[in-house]
Amino acid sequence: MHPALAAAERRAGPLRGRLGFLALALAYGLLVAACLGSLGREGELSLGRTPLANLLKTATEFARPSFVDAWWGNPQLEYVSDDGTVLRVEDRREVERHYLAGLAEASWTTIRIATLGSLLGALLALPLAVLVARNLAAPRALAWLAKGVLDVARSIHTLVFGLVLVGIVGLGPTAGILAIGLHSLGSYGKLFAEAIETLDMAAVDAVRSVGAGPAQVFFNAIWPAVLPQFVSSHLYIWEFNIRDSTILGIIGAGGLGLLISEATALFQWGRLATVLIVVIALVASFDAMSRCIRKALL
Image (cartoon, rainbow, N blue to C red; front, side, top):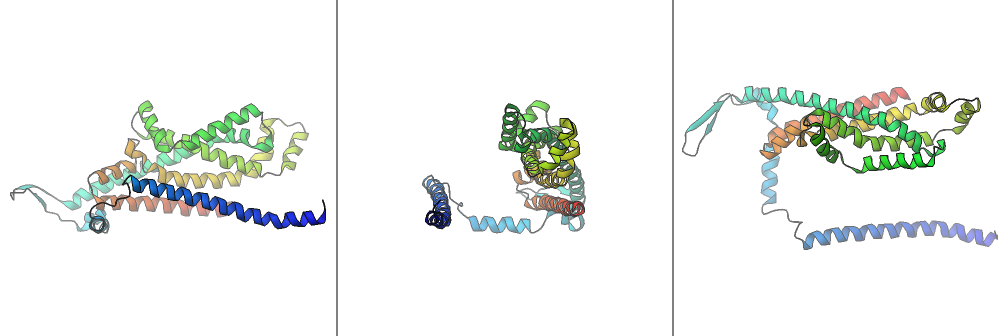
């Protein structure tokens, strides 16, 4: 190529990159404007009649999580009718302690759903990731089939899987485990395949050259090299599934979601605050644990 033409192409390269970025940014801005404009025309951007008053009331109730009643609740709380008749008297401390016991059980159910669902998704994704990884040159038909399965699993939300599975296997944690596993299958497969594609193929070719079969190649050349990345990906998705599984109880799959649904349905913002504190504590604990494990793998 003529030196002048090469220099012109080098100058045009950054320019095309900036123009391309500006075009994408303009397209994104037009999409945002279209979304806002259509919602505005349909009257769907209203904040309600008294949004500030509602926000203040909700924030006030959130500021006092219900778990404090287990120690400082009214032991003689009276429920009175409009005419002043005492309907019942309850000990808020005893009631809240009973609720906290149920909350602990629901938290354990959520952990079990996320843990077993994540493991199921990882095990199902591993053979599909091997087929999808381009550097392993799997048969084209099998590679496309595996990629289709992973794309479908990743596209369907966990709640949709849960709704279908509750109708198949019934209410309870089993539906939640299967829903988490099927949705996680897509994410695991993508991450596992990308990890395999970063391999140095020299080691793989060396094992193949001595007559090793596919299983021997995988366990002797591929598995040891990608195991740290696989573990890191598993920890990340496991942590994400802890959050995801908290809402599966809304559709009857058990766990913290049922308590969240009950609290929001009854406008019990203090109890919702208690449940959310537990969710945050779970996620933070798993995040700290995963960081420690990742450090150990380095």
